[in-house]
Length: 344
Image (cartoon, rainbow, N blue to C red; front, side, top):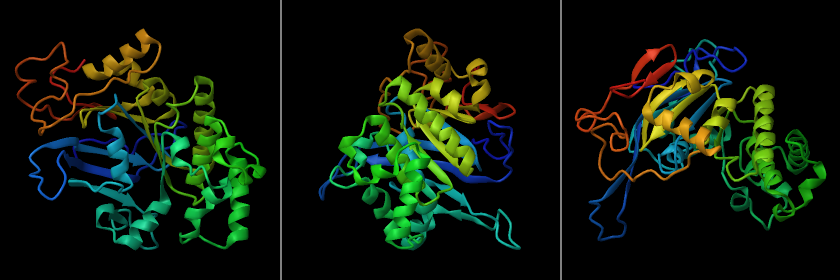
């Protein structure tokens, strides 16, 4: 594995998880730019390139980068909305009696339809824009329980309605809101509904894809604090996708910084702001400090396989080696790895 420090990583409250919940090994995804029966498939987008990391049980792993860096594609690969071109996604079940973590490891890409459905009950995806991800014609009760109806956890309508009422209260809404429709809520309230939909099957892992980027700053804080409370109460693991390093450092245990589909740095969130080594990570922090907000520029599309440092064309320190050779993802201290010939 070329990266990933989730195994044995400490969470924000000092807990240590020796066995990760999810492990990503050398994950890659390519998309063809041409489609149709007569397409020659000569042009390809290399969206995710040899990415490895792990998510601790009860921990939060943040993936940070500008738009187009591959962080959302990575998240969708985890839930198998896309199938990877290469690499493995390993899901670690709770150890069975007489078993071990190694024997309970499963490769998600090898799941059949039934097993994939059960996996998706344990790993839930929360989308960026709740206005688009919530059906405007349905009542909130139906939005929360329709997926539950076709799961292994369905116990009947009355139990589902009671569970929905409890979940709405848990995310800070009223049980009476179950009979309203999405258009009757504010953006922050709709995001709470999206979170409630993700929680109703009692998952082990939440994948939060830019869940606060479209919200006002004051509402962002409320949603982040809600997620922190839910993580503590439910012992949830979280993969947190964002372009905002400030939010990531506040919320996450470990942060992986991506650029052009490549993981360029990984470090504990508590120390990354002062110990950042990669020029791109420093650029992101510099953008936050100078602009008073997050850096969310668009990254140049990768149309060929990366064979050199992906940041070389923007890096002020790059030399001929950076433009001709891919740096290794090297560990430089406990929990801190970087892909750079001239770190620091």
